[in-house]
Image (cartoon, rainbow, N blue to C red; front, side, top):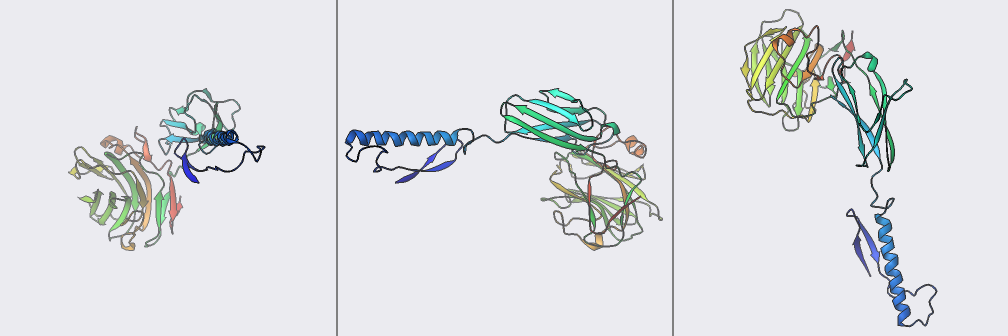
Length: 347
């Protein structure tokens, strides 16, 4: 006869009851008292087994202590603040954290705080950091490589029309967006429509798109709808474009080569999702795909930035000389990217 027994944590074990197996060492001619002792023995054996399952090391044991270092913001920026957090799983009790940097013999910080703060990140801070955490349950170690992928004076070259060549931006907002700014520089002789910046979610493939529709018109999409900005036709010159959007008013601001255009309205009250795929040089007609060669970019792209705030006119004008006060989600001075297909990063 068997049934299922439940232990702490919701796990289930098969439990068998043996009613006719004699007690080890008992006489074959045991009376009823012996049978009662046999039953008591197996009941005790059964209870001990359940306790061992629920005890540390059994099926119901607590998870092993582990640690991971996370950065805020996700992509560090020079001369902005940075917070490294040592996130621990497997123990909710008191812990001690020791922060160290490779090449420095003394700990940078020791105590109950799981946070290491950089008020203004600079080149002297770059390196490999270690967080060692200890508690009554054990210890764990996590490492973090703090580095800057500075692409200043470099450009991505898209040499030919294709439906598979792109730059995947390996960063995205930590939260849904009610305000944002996108800036980039491009250089091309294309006259057909082409996509510069494509930000797609599973719900909306045109969540954010910056598209040059024709030589005299840019189109900017939020949530599948767009506004158009008429511009002078370029005569073989690079174009620096910035665009901001704010949800409470729906106001869109557009700059071409640092010159502001009349403001327009788009998608008032909308919220931009943050679970996104961000691509340069192609337009996503599906989440992470659906590329069309006739909308692909051919030429050079550089100085790509995205912020979760709207920049002011003076901040846009100063972009060549300094970054705005706000941390970018990602930026050219530390650009997280992956090249797919035929795209080249050159000086």
